Amino acid sequence: MTTDDNKALVQQFFEQVINQRNLAALDQFVPPGGVNHTVPPGMPQETNQFVGQYLNAFPDGQVTVGEASLPPASRSR
Image (cartoon, rainbow, N blue to C red; front, top):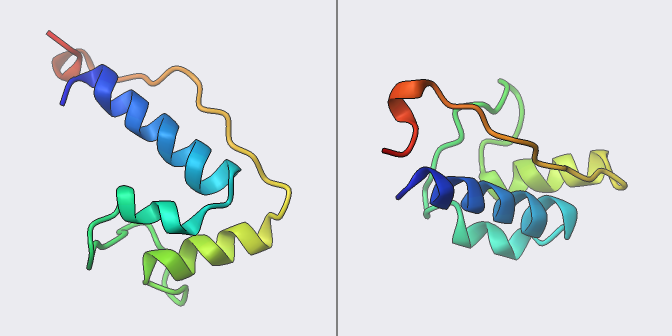
């Protein structure tokens, strides 16, 4: 994937899952059995449960993705 492909994927994730509150869309972004290493201890480890809990905690929350910054070595060639 190119850097632009990755940026588009992140944009789609936040728009579909968070802004549109569409948990079913997670299947497009997280593989079955996928592990989220950012979940704090004591929180649900299942991605659907964790994201669902986040959406319930912030019912009016919206995410705007700005410009992504990557180290020079990982930018598109």
